[in-house]
Each structure stands twice: as C-alpha cells, then as structure tokens.
Image 1: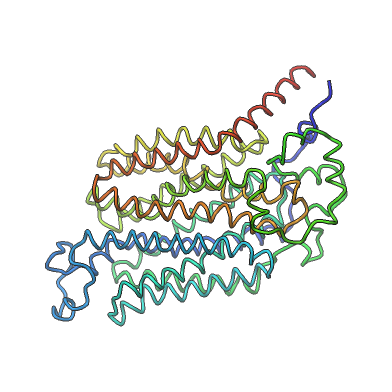
Image 2: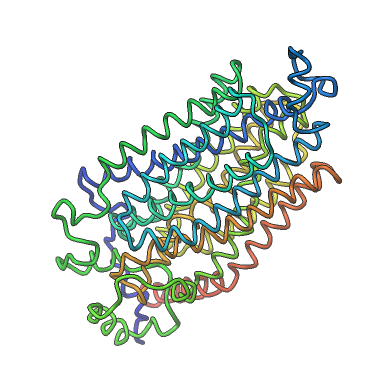
Length: 501
C-alpha cells in the first residue's frame, strides 16, 4: 500500500521548536511588545468606562460622582442625561472603533505586503498614541466634551491601530517556519493578553488621579515603543544576511518546516503534484491580490469562525471590568485587577493548545475540543457567585478555552493560511491573509459590542452569556468542514501506524 504524501512528509525527528539566532529572539520580543502596547491602550478605554460614564453624566443623577464645582460649568458640559445613555454610547464607541479597525485591517494587510513593514507598524503605533492622548487626556484638560469629536477620533484610532496585527504576524512569519509554529505563535500571541494586563495595571495605578492620566501614561509608552520599533526591528532574515524561509536547501527537514498544516486540496496526497509545486516557485507573483487571498483554501471558513469567536473574546475584553463593577458592585480598580485572570487563562490556553496542535500536526480538532469546553465554562461563569476568588478561577478557565483558540486562529493558523502550497515561498501573502482573517473577525466583534450593550440594557447580563454561547457554537459550526477533513487524515495516519507496526 502506498503511503499518503501528507503522512510521508512528517519526519520522525521533527523538532517542536525551531533553531533560532539572537535575531529571532529580538524579533520575537520587539513584535511581542509592540502589539502588547497597542492592546494596552485599548484596554485602558475599557478599564475606565465607569469613570468616563460618571464624568459624562450630571452629578445630580449620578450617585457615584463626586460633587463638582462650579455646578454651572459642569451642567453645561455633560453629554448624557443618565448613566444608561452614557453606557450605550460607550458601547457605540467600541463598535465604531472595531468597524474602522476591521476596514483598516483589510487595507493594512495589502499595504503591509507592498511597503516596508517596519515603517507601517511604527507609523501606526506613534500616530495612534497621539490620537489616544487627544481623546482621553487633552479633551479632559480642556473640558471639551463632544460626541461627534469622540466618534471621529475613535474612527481614526481604529484605522491606525489596524496596522499592527498584519505587520507583526507577517514579520513573525518571515522569521519562523512551520516547525513549532503552533507553540511559538501560541506563546507569542500572548502579546494581546500581556497588553491587556499591562493596560489594566497602568490604568489602576493612576486612575485615582483621573481617567485622563490613564490615557496619558499608556499613550506615552506606546509612542516610545513605536520609536524603538522604527530603529530596531528587522522585518526579514535577509536584512542580516540570513536565508529566507524556504531558501535554505540543507535538507528536507527545513523544507518540511515551511509546509503549511492547511492542505490546498485532497490531491495533496499525490507526491507527483507535491514535487512539481516544490520545484516551480520562481513564476509566482510577489504579492497576491485581495480576492486571490480570499479564495485560498480555509481562509473564508476560518474568517467566519473568527468573526464569531472574536465577538465573544472582545466582549470580555471591552466589558468585563464594567460587568464586574455593574453586576457585583465591586470598585472599578478592583474589577480592573480581577479581569487580568481572563488574560492569564488566554496566555496559557494559546501556548498549550498550540503545542498540542504541533504534536498532532492538526489545528481544527484542538480548536473544536477547546470550544466545546468553552460553552460549558461560559455557562458556569454566568452563574459565578459574588466571590472574587471563585470568580477569578472560573474567569481564568473561560479565558483558557476562549482566548486560546482565538490566539491560535489570529496567529499560527493565519500564518499557515498565508504559507499554503499555492503561495509557498511568497511571504508577501502573509499580511494580506492575516488582514482578511482578523478584519472579518473585527467586523463580528464590532457588531457584537453594540449587541452586548443592547441585550444587557433590555434583557440583562444572563442573556448576554446565552448570546456568547450561541456565537461559540457557531464557531464550531464554521470550522466543522475543516475538522472533518483533518480528523479523516488523523484516522489515516493512525491506520498507517497500526499496519506498519
């Protein structure tokens, strides 16, 4: 019996973690912390929602607001007649940000594949920091409150922040091949969760002086990070004389390290087709088009799945501190610090599940199992008692099973999709594919933030969690064709091992 090609390609001594130089370590750390700083600035906004809502609501109708003088000045500058309207506008701002972020991702991926990734990333970080400073700090110092101005600033901020993820994933894809990609990218994708923790920590440290100082601190740190990225980040190995991925011809193990886990079609098992594709890469275009990237196998399915999953993940990101304060009556600073446990769970989940997917050589089964457990953890967290230790424990478990798969799709799987045989050796596809996956996910997340505020206002928090369960189940549904295909390959591999002894 002939051995299927997809099974023969897996060397027995394949390393789970690829060899790397100090340049790889520097790239890992710089991209990690650059995106962490972008996420820290986003987390600041979610962590100070209670303070902003109090500031935008008249003190006579706001029991939590301090007495403000002179009263005439405050009464003339408030934005909303009650806290409910202020909360709804905060949800609208989240939606505005995510919609502009989603649109920006589709564009930023294409721009990143055609311009210097370091320039695009640094420009986005520094410009976004300036917008955040104006939004949260300068307007408060000048006592200037205007809904349209806030909305316009948040549109611009979403567009600028969208330059981050496609660029950092493409740069990581240039430096790290498939060998250990699940583990390396799983560990690296903790950058978002670390950014959330950093943002929560910085905000809680200065929140007592006013929410404007939380924006000031995170914007300053982000601007400094953009400057460091501009002068220190290497976007590809060729900048220091190292071979590009796929150019090193020292052995088949290195070739295998660049093979994607996503197969282009069922004929992938034919070694003759594989040999022809491996030999003929010189005629491929330098950068594929947007619609070409959309048509790559697995891109649309994972994009739709990520739209549902990112809705849930970002709802926790944007609303968790507010939920803890609103539902349990805990102080805002305490809620900020407690919300860190969701990100801790996501860090561990992404790393562990990425390692398991490397060992199995399949992503979809790991995602499906984790998401099934996520449904149960969401149901359990919705009934968490008014106890901080118990809430933190269930929150960490929920982050493990939701944040982990979210990190995998947005990083390792996006890199797999951008390194398929159809574009193998073409690094210029990475940012475009990443932008499509994350952009579609952000559209789902944008719609979700408005729905969360709407459902909570009319039906209560319990129905919000039912909505999360529905979206998580939809994620499993979208990846089910890929799950069936990969499970079939796993069964073929198992039968092969049994027959060969």
